[in-house]
Length: 117
Image (tube, rainbow, N blue to C red; front, top):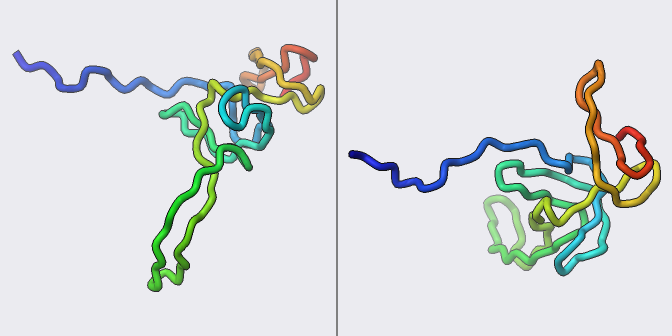
């Protein structure tokens, strides 16, 4: 009998509480307390790239063909979505999100001030 070598099947990406363009605060790690805007969300990995948060250094070689100079670049690295909390635009505080269905579709709302996002 043939048994697949993959032990875990890849799960379908589920809906996350963080979306591109949200303002978030970092809850844990070296950048705890920092705020920034979400630039990109990678649903399959459960990570997001946040503006001015979680900088890493990348060493690059010069490439004359592409007219690139070599050196050490600083760029944002992905951060786990579980370490981020969305800041409500109306009350300007970190809050958990709720969702409810309307005629236009599902809407997110702040659980503190009940304002739609």
